[in-house]
Length: 256
Image 1 (cartoon, rainbow, N blue to C red):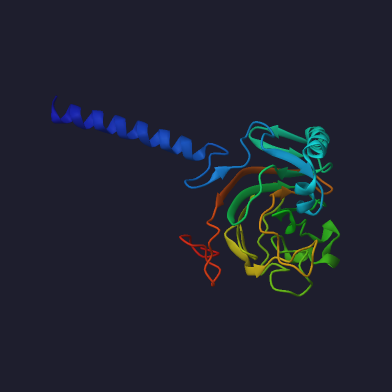
Image 2: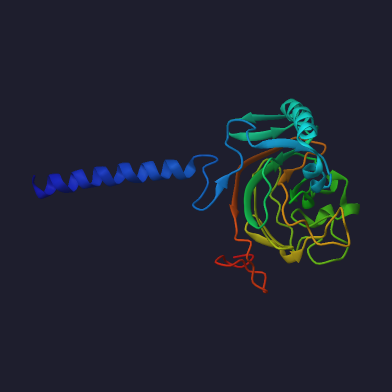
């Protein structure tokens, strides 16, 4: 083979490989290295339904009670949650989509897109919540600090660190927003659209206010008053062994 022919062959192989890698990177719901996809892009496998309720009550139910409850939950979420083009779509009603599996320390990445006058949130270990607002004046919730934007730990005590976001980072309606949330121990760091909005703040236990957050619990996607769409929901579990500084053993510190 001549040098020219060899070079052309090499370039063809390189271009083909590059295109394949690019296509894979752009594939919806394909997790990055070290992460798993909580949503498979096709159906509601791995999810059940729940409301704002102490997640420890779920584990206290016996097998028969769980089975009965789970049947009713699945019936409800299939009425209000659908999958369209690799996106989770909720109609603004029904139970919150809740992982069947519980998690302890983790990094959670996801994207969402919502509509005017709706609000939502993400429950961590079953505890409310990383808040999602309609941040505009027309949304009618500036009296609840919606004008500060999404991403804050809304149910923390008022005025406590992390209860309100550090900056307004929301994108306009119609655009996708990206969350990167790290929870290690009782500390939470939140990036919204690559802007730091919560910096290593304690998540208050909404259900047992004199106690720290539960050591494990589900991830919940809240539905509240309007359509919301989710995609690319990825989670990386972090070792339960933590350093005094709040860093997980063998993992990067919060916010990195």
